[in-house]
Image (cartoon, rainbow, N blue to C red; front, side, top):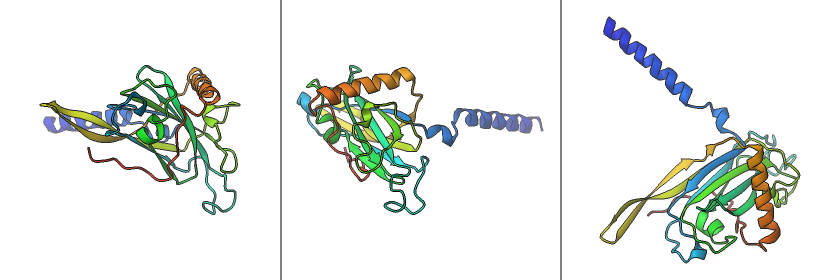
Length: 229
């Protein structure tokens, strides 16, 4: 009897601890998300493009959606600007861009093809910190034009969920290098006023003075999958 009570008490404690350590689903659906990618070498740095990372971003509808579906009713209802910011391994913002995502849509980025291939400078980077900020979109297909500069203090909105891959080194012996690729969600984070201002100011400088460099090449309309390493 005593042993059974001890076991039951341990199970209750473990259950409570798990519940406390696991954030509720609503806490994951925030306007601000962060993750990383490693073992990258930028095209500008002369590195090979054998390794890539992929980011898939979905609009889960938390910001609203048309009752009639895409293209019917108010076509801009629930649209979100996914504002992406990528920092090199010297903590410098090297890329920023915006993509419009309609409710229930998923878009993708190839880190090598869509981001690293068009850097602000020619400094090579082996790791990248990627941040996503979700803001309310304007009307029409141009509703997210330059919104990554966060001009005019746009409305932060929920509704973005994102996942990403990155290659990890597992073997480096006798001249052989092997990697395996993992996919994990972006982590929700708290966007401070100072960080929001920093992202806006740096991105505005890239857009205003980069002559097209430092912006993403495209917003893929389909989710991208990992590649065999």
